[in-house]
Length: 214
Ligand code: SAH
Image (cartoon, rainbow, N blue to C red; front, side):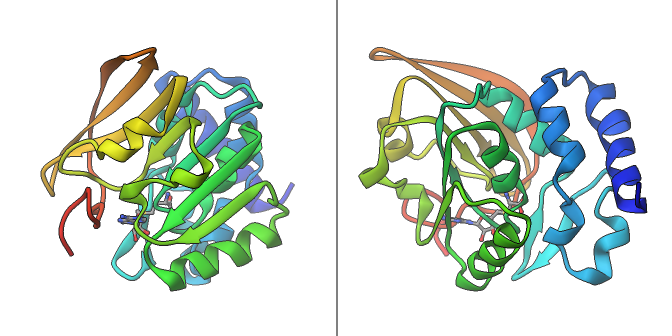
């Protein structure tokens, strides 16, 4: 086993399992997906540490535990169509792709989307469609979705995302001010939307029509 594979196993045991994540498929995906390839080579040795890292353009790849927590909250079984807002490095996209049928992921910054596309191909992830644009409006042509994950902080829950959530579907989204947010899970049950508080978090801004103004 190489050093990165060992670092990954430790990351999963000490940061993910130790904090209560039990989903075996998720733990396996995080043990196998080479997170370091999604950051700049100068940061490879830090890629399995317990914090976010810079990915350029003022953006960050989320802390491993936050990726696990948000993915776990979607409760994926393998059959779902999932929408991700904020492709960023593509790491979260790769984890989702291992756990559901198809991932649609939107990123507003072209250079990040291009780089993510390259790395995803390099690691053999093909059940994804990437798009450059304002993800706060969702991806109406592909709706409804079984799961929607927003990996940037929003001032309020973007209405189009609620509309694009299918029956029984789950939306995970950080909502709050620019410094601190609450992670919410919203589940659609018919006309009813059930909202749960999953705790505090801190994300970069969701910038767009239903997010912060640029
Ligand atoms: N899941 C990513 C997180 C990247 S940070 C990862 O782990 O690497 C959040 C990303 O959301 C940034 O790349 C930012 O450019 C992007 N973003 C912000 N507002 C957006 C919007 N309205 N639509 C799409 N992407 C957006």
